[in-house]
Length: 424
Image (cartoon, rainbow, N blue to C red):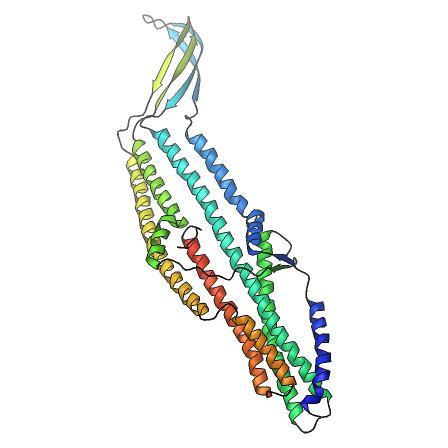
């Protein structure tokens, strides 16, 4: 029996394999990347922490603008009166005094504390924006990773199914010599390799899916399928321009600058603490022994800043300010380096993808299908057939992985730029 006579059997067996593959495909909800990002941000439970931080900072700002609580002093005691001449006791009795004073701070300390609290609200809002941007970037990266893993698994399973069908048909015919058995064994070996690639892609897809479901706040077993996303990669400005934008828009740098300004206010507040706090309020004093005596008026009290105990606090706050400045400088240098690094990686991947037009994957798929048809007709040898099938899988994996690496570099650049667009 020649290869020409088994074409009909191969053609008849191929649809059976396709039906079996469709039957094992799990039901999944189709969703776009944009919709996925919206779901992740809307349903993520960790986001509530940052919203609560904003509320807390608002309460602290309101409290920072208030006066200190009044102080109430109550005194109880005994009073004894004696005759100045003879020293004879004239009478004993109880005495008590009540005073309520309001501490009043000078030197703008309340305004400074309010300004510090205002910076804290800004930091809380900045933290929420940074969390949203990071979450969106992570959702896009995982979403594209899920799409790429499904595509790689589908391509590998297609190749494996073709080889399994051919191997079964070849061994089912009356063998004339060792060649058919050896060809079938080679096809089965290549099918195993393709199935391993599919299994690896499936495992990667499951891992990504579980993380996405956790971010979405849904059950781990929920299945989704990513609609083919936009594959375009925009041209970006030079790394120098990107670095200057990141210096102005980066969330971390904005946060560190706000903390540095806030620390400067803390230094000013520590210096102002040397100004005395004046407490003023009414008092009432009643005593009874030989006579009844009542005193009332206004009480005024303050501290005397003789020993300058605030010097240690000022020095500590100045040290924290210097540390904040050093942290800011180090972060600026690190972010500059990250921008140049990610920009170089993005351009390298983008240039590589530019050499492969958008139809490369479809052409390899068509070439693999054409090789399968020609092998069944006996027009090409087994070596050419298997090489073409493996080339289809390898090219699909290479294109998807390269595009994913470029996308991740682009998302990193956007995150470094404060989550804003980078297009020219």
